[in-house]
Length: 275
Image (cartoon, rainbow, N blue to C red; front, side):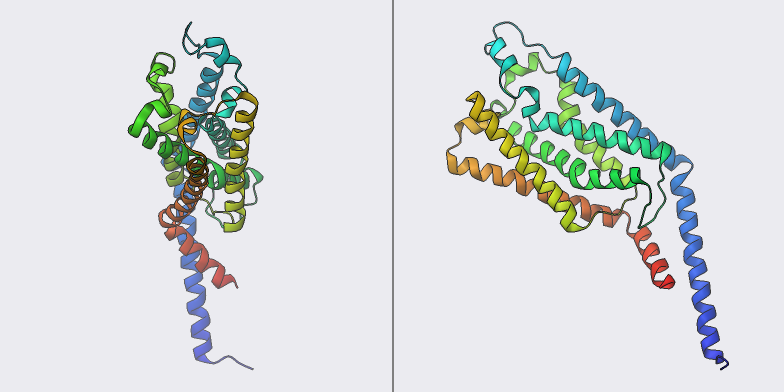
């Protein structure tokens, strides 16, 4: 049976709309995967990976406690070492994330798509959404809030002679700033809410368990603030740590959808037309 003129017009209009959507996506991908934008993304990942890897090296091998400061030998051998600090674990997460992102820039792909096939791309997007962005902002916010309230509870003034200011900003400030820069330069589809939140909350709960293990074996809490808090407030602080991390996850997801809203709209239009 021959199609009516109305049906032919509708099919023609649909084809034209699909062609326009595809052309806009191709233009978007050309601008996003080549030229100045791709160089900026590569530079962010390169500088971030180098900075955090050097920060880990300096943190582990170049920080030396001066003689007589808080029983130097006891501080060096205390159970858990530097790995008991969320700050240090976060720098490791950031170094891993930006290294994976850098490898993806070189060997993977950065095309605007809802279903990336590259394993590097999938790993990059999940690590950023679940760990890198929320933990970086958790560390940055919680550290500077407590620092401004009473620095002796989290970063005593005596540490100024040991811990250089540039390293302090690398591990407590730059982690968040570079995560924001990455969010604006890398298109990504966030994982399902269940997968992302489960991974994020699991990480924080494991860290809280780790803090209590360190307390059990060393006899001291990781942070001076925990020493002065009564048990109910200590539990509240641990709950707040998980809650802040979850809030940072949702914030990252929200900002990602706002920043990349035009691209998501084009991809959804293309998907609807294909269906």
